[in-house]
Image (tube, rainbow, N blue to C red; front, side, top):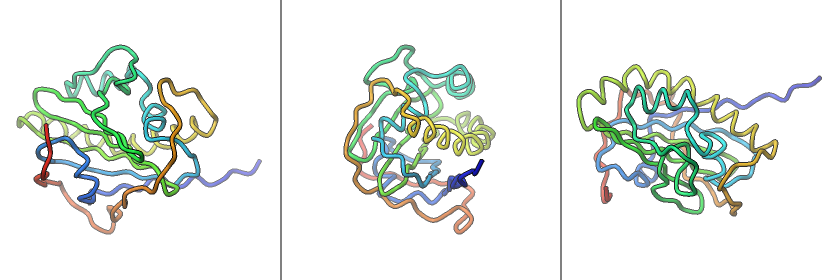
Length: 196
């Protein structure tokens, strides 16, 4: 049996301004971006549903609701993905939003150009949000590559994805430099021209 090598997911903390501009947060205190080269053709919503499902899994409930305190919807809906509200979308991206009393969060999924990218943006509204995210971010960065690879496998196998519909795939927004090329301890960027 011959195994095809699996391309690694790349991570960067140097998230491009064009991607940051898609966030709904008034300030971005933390951002990271994972990208995976893939030949799987799917819409951003199909990718998001392949990654997170229609409702949060028990593990996602534990992390998102239990640890981070995020408010999540409980049932499947065309307006949510994995319990996160669909805040906005374009032809090549979708933004999922949620918040707790201590932090706001956006997850952006972008497709096209033979790649999928997952960007996480956080706004710390309270010191506790920063304190809780510090250890949680290490788990997040460890889990994301596996989530991307599993979603690619699901989509490649033609698994049903709930509410998603097929759309054309335009080019993806630039992915930035790899973390090894430009390491950063943290991001603090004032977002411009955003509505909450």
